[in-house]
Image (cartoon, rainbow, N blue to C red; front, side):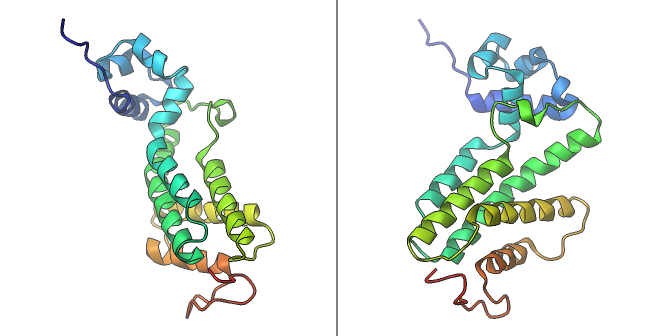
Amino acid sequence: MPRPVTIDDKVILKAAREMFLLHGFKAQSALIAKQAGVSEGTIFKRFKTKAQLFLTSMRDYEEEQKWIDDLSEAPGTNTVRENLISAATRIMEQMEVAIPRMLSLRASGVPMPNPAKMPHRPPPIVQGEALGNYFMEEINLGRLTMAEPMIQAHMLIGSMIHYVMGSQMGLTPCHRMHYIETLVDLHLGLSCSNKRESTGSLVNG
């Protein structure tokens, strides 16, 4: 007997993303199943709820986990500045995909799920915690001095969200890479003009 065809989750998520962007959160699971070429039962064996399917289709969990894993292994390697610029670049690349999707849905007036009732924590929380944990590891290694690592981590994420939101309206103050480098330098207490290490914040970064 021929082996049954297995549909990859990516096929389902692509179909779900297309239907959600077209119809909003009210998109029927039957339409998503038809688009993916699977049954509704198959979808809900892999994604327990419609909210979980929506959130997963709008986020790249695989890439998100990759940069989080990479950042968790970064303490003590390279320089703090290099590690942060690398992580911030990857975070902003994800934001530049996810935020326009969400803004498009909101602008069209389609129903959106309540973030508080979603099965996973929102990206800014996950991103902020990952950066905060990295800061604390570098502090423990003596490479960084920072009074409020978690607060600064969330400030960094908020600044990147602000940039991406502004870019949707043509209001970016500068090129993305210059923004990221300047943002990182400000948080590390570096001079943005010559990027020399300051004695007050970055120790050996």
